[in-house]
Length: 68
Image (cartoon, rainbow, N blue to C red; front, top):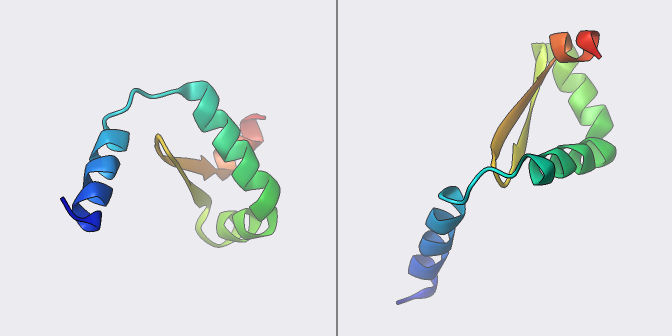
């Protein structure tokens, strides 16, 4: 098995891992801490920002912030 096949296998294994809300929350908070300006620009421009986590994509919207 070559490097590409091993990478594809690892990606497949990660995509089938169970959702861990605590880990996903940490990843979102870490991303926000390092990319606040970018997130604010996306919220202003599109009304939402997409944050990729190991568990999948998280969409942060203006409505999410209004509720906080």
